[in-house]
Image (cartoon, rainbow, N blue to C red; front, top):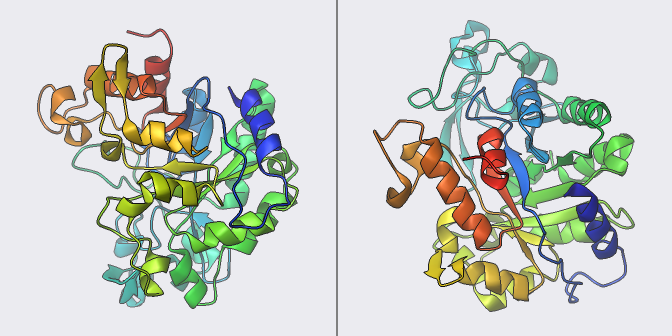
Amino acid sequence: MLLPMLLLVACASRPGPPPDAPRSAMPPEARPMIIAHRGASALLPEHTLAAYRRAIEDGADAIEPDLVSTRDGVLVSRHENEIGGTTDVAERPEFADRRTRKRIDGEPVEGWFTEDFTLAELKSLRARERLPELRSTAHDGRFEIATLDEIIALAADASDARGRALALVPELKHPTYFASIGLAMEDRLLATLAAHPYTRRAPVLIQSFETGNLRELRGKIGDAPNIRLLQLLERPSKQPYDLAASGHATTYGEMLRPEGLRTIATYADGVGPPIASLRLYATADGHRSALVDDAHAAGLQVMPWTFRPENAFLPRRYRAGSRGARNETGSIRQLRDHVEAGIDGLFADDPALARRALDAGP
């Protein structure tokens, strides 16, 4: 699947049109790309090298590092810059005085933040399971926080060993906030990608819930034919924080409409909406989604998030058993129904289960 993806990228990311000009359509993928959401995060602590390695072994086409910055400007992989729930920092007395309260994307957040630690300090911490009420904590305390450089090196080694390209799907977290404290991440991400031979040729899909940084990145990508951009979308009532902070009234709901999708297509190659926004409906020919059809009509690929194997995350029609139970049968049905609707990629916490759903497994 990834070789056709590379050819599509080569045709779609060349310099030339200004940021608001119509872009060439990205054709739907013949086979959806399985993106390991934070690694094999249903099985191992998220955003660790172990979780990424397991995801690759389990058949993922791509791995997804969420990126935040350290105080000394190093890009590391954490779902949030607040790390109280995903590391053992709260148990480390030497860092007790780092606990603080901040306003992140307009919301008050209390805890410990990556931007208040050097890389060396963060490397002394150990990762832990973010959802201990649903997933095993047996691996808590074993793994370090990973840097983007380490993740790229892992992908390069795994690609060489397996003879297949592995895509990298980095998400820039809280870009407006990090820019406001002098730690903007966009140029450092591009510099890191350019510094590694692997990411100068392997598929890269940069994602963000904000819009301004994707527009700027579109102008900065230049002649890198392997880099695409994915506009992430949230629930309809919310706004991209950069738009809210600058006084614009645009919501994700408006961005999900046909005219909004056409605007996204002027700077991005695809959209990453929440699964619920696809609103599948049954037809005589199988499942369809108006959002998928509208996005394809605008020339955008569609890669929804996040497919998870526990009943707690499954819509009622797919559940079986207790709320916290793992439900592989229901998860595979959910995955297959959405693949039938024409999605081009998917974010999955359990790439092995996603691979079963896409292949010939039961």
